[in-house]
Image (cartoon, rainbow over all chains, first blue to last red; front, side):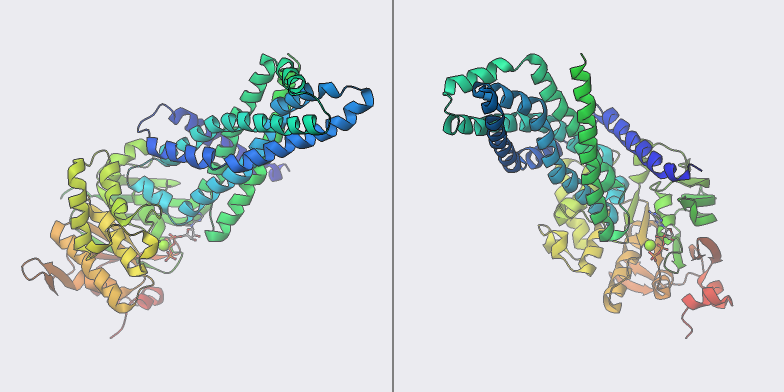
Length: 251
Length: 266
Ligand SMILES: Nc1ncnc2c1ncn2[C@@H]1O[C@H](COP(=O)(O)OP(=O)(O)OP(=O)(O)O)[C@@H](O)[C@H]1O
Ligand SMILES: [Mg+2]
């Protein structure tokens, strides 16, 4: 009767098996350092433009929305704190992770997927390399390290976006805006703002690798794997975000 | 008699419950050759991948160099795989690496292959010269023709001088002249190094070339060989089942309609 549940449950189980094998592979040799550095470049440096742009404009939008809302209460001076808190706690991590999912989950899935359907993964195994060590581990480490960095950058340019609005439209002084923002942030916010992208980074890379490595059915299959990876990664990001926020709120 | 290099004991490999090969048993002894014939989807590729432990059997047992690899862990398999070479059906060259890096890959990555780093380039060049592609070192696989990629694949499969070499459809999709050149290379690799050789093919002629010729290092060319069915056997697969195992003469005498479809009648 519950047969329709079997495929998704099996998929989730296989996903966690891959996740477990990846985490256990971290101390194992050989460490493909070149691959790690290359992935950090592709994922970190390569994602910089999209992260800068999304971060900046969400800061601008938040400045604008807050100005309307805060003017009603005569609390325009609170723009700095509100922009800072929203960005660091929620917008920065989630938007950056969604951008990374769109860019890197799909990139990883299509690259590994093409390798899978052209038997390159099998060739790799036949020629003495473990795909988990050679392909998954570098992407996993690179993404979970780079996403917090990217998020910090997104937070910062977002605050600059908010600052431009605060100065230009709301006529706050620089000191009012930045002092407010600085004072509003607590360690808790920073912890939350860095733990989230760290976990999202694991999800983004693992989902990409997972769908890439189980690709079947030629080029069409690669397209399917890519789409699935992006959709699943984004859903995971929002679900985990709710969960982590809940943990921090109820502390 | 020496120990079998490869042994299948009633092996079944299935995907999502649907068997791709079923109850397949055979043995290959050192220095022998096998030609596996079968229609598309009959399970030829699955047999080769199961031999290397790339696919796991559902039932039955697989032995490679005398070791039971049926349940062996992936990292334990690497030492055994290092003694095998494989040409994949799709070539499976790494398209992000140059030809030189592709051929060097097994030398650099197989732990049990001891090749000092300064010798890698010389061995890669030698392997590529063997397949007459010494000038392509810095090219990428996408810059080569299909036949050239096949030859690079052969070079990569043989660069570590493995004692067992598996060729998956080496002549598929090639014109007859290139196909015969590729077969000549395979016979040459086999006879120069006395490697145990398995080829999967849909062309019966490929099997004939394997059977009827040998490489003479003195004249550096192929010459007709008297083999009398020794050491070379044909296997025929039909929908995942082994329906024939025997010499070329036995194969040609067979009256089974499926089997005789693979045999050219002169
Ligand atoms: N990874 C896989 N997932 C699911 N089914 C597979 C997979 N690999 C092979 N099969 C199935 O196993 C059967 C045998 O496939 P195999 O690739 O061995 O055929 P083949 O004899 O090599 O054919 P061809 O001459 O076309 O290469 C086919 O029915 C195929 O659909
Ligand atoms: Mg095949």
